[in-house]
Length: 273
Image (cartoon, rainbow, N blue to C red; front, top):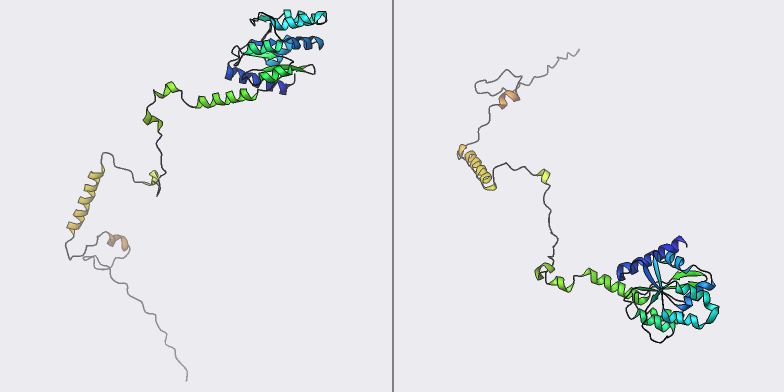
């Protein structure tokens, strides 16, 4: 089997296993037509079914299908011998009925027992496609083929996935109505908050009120130190820094003298008469 086809079959069986509960060994229900085709084409039916379904298989056949093979005489003795190796599935039919009707009745409306149907009957396959979760296998040119899932199977798969997204009815009693409503977070408009690295650090142990009181007292002291109508006195430290090299001036009042402007000497120009 090619790698691409084997990968597709593996995905199909994973779908049936995860969604509908198929487990190994897979119960493969074989009809009389499948046994005749396998013997005519010399196919190892059990081995090929295991490779197609990607796991262990347990082939089964009904008594009605074996009865059909007996009615065809010695020409189909090899098919009868192949069918005798399979497990018998009780169909509870007192009188033998056609194999298609027997297999369709065993599967039922929901395929409760998780059967994989291996049949060469085209009418039976078309009828089984209306039932969800029924994998179909047939022989096409000496190759056993697993059909893609039917529309009914895909609908049930989609509905089960949608149900898994929401809580069950029993879970609603545990959830309060207030928790179901999610709060709507509106985007904040306007200027963003300042960069925390550019903000002046807060003094430890000092809250906003005490810091405001401290600033108020400092401002009040600065206002009280200067009387109304008076100019603020200059600090004396600038005298030594502004004029460090000048040794002249009124040292008592600490005021420097103005630098005298030197006049340029004008040369007497004598003119010869």
